[in-house]
Each structure stands twice: as structure tokens, then as C-alpha cells.
Length: 87
Image: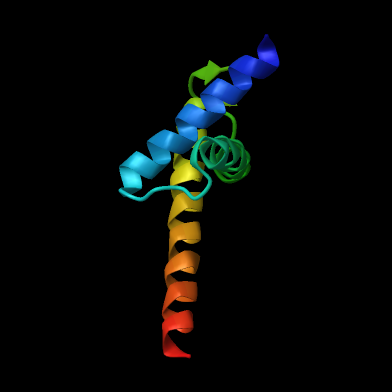
């Protein structure tokens, strides 16, 4: 049950980051889960393990890390789209 709870919270974190940034995460639900997990790792690595925890996620650093991740991914995707249009 703990693993399922982690997937749900990771997906919610990824979805929330996409909503905050106003951008969709590629991959739908799976992309949201991946963004949530990577964002949680990134946020915890940068900001530490503080604030409320749900399903072993430090929620505030996880959301901030996921927002940073969505920003980086959307920047890369936009840059790749521009380069394709130039050729």
C-alpha cells in the first residue's frame, strides 16, 4: 500500500507543478508521476528535507523541485521545437 500511496502523491506533485507553471507535462499520468519523483529528489537535494511529509515526500521541497523540473523540460521542449522549424 505504501508504494501505491507514493505513486499517487508523486503524480499529484507532478500535476500541481504543471498547473503552477501553466504547462502540460509530456506523458500524461506517467509523466506526472515521474516529474513528481524527480522533482521530490531535486527539491530535497537543493532545499533539504523539511516541512510536512506525506508518503515519504517532503511536500514543499518536492513541489518546488517539480516546478523547477517542469520549467527546465518545457524550456528544452520549446528549444527543440524551434530548431526543428528552422530546418
